[in-house]
Image 1 (cartoon, rainbow, N blue to C red):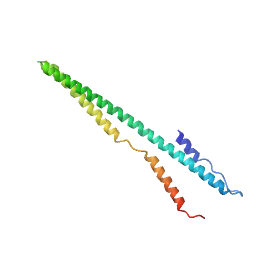
Image 2: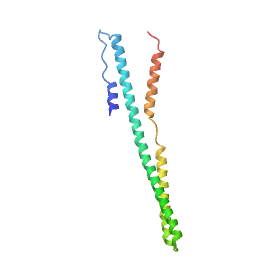
Image 3: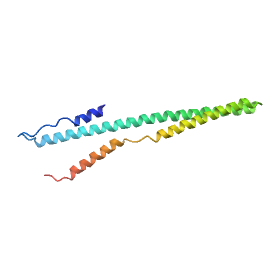
Image 4: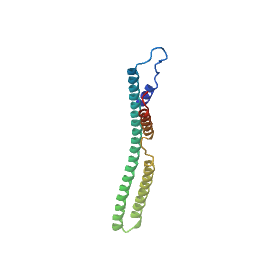
Length: 149
């Protein structure tokens, strides 16, 4: 988990400047830039992790849609075969059986399609990462609004 590693880098122990030696302006700017880079890296890792999760959900929904389309195709084939038997056969049982099988396949395809639709409603964008990006941009905007001391 690289995002946890990046997050832990932000929580490293800060240097103690309580002694007589104060850090120089260069050290403070360097430290600020380093912390900003670590924060940016952590946010990029968070965004990547959330997008990967959404990708997995999209993959699962795609499989369900593929199953539904396949079953509809099979149902159509059985309907065509049943129609052919209607024209050829004089007895009801053969084609009636094919029509029942085709109907069952179509109902099953409808069930898989409904499950795929429900799963697709759960797909979301990277909400946590978006909140973090917004919070960071607001914090940086506040820093720009401060007057130099």
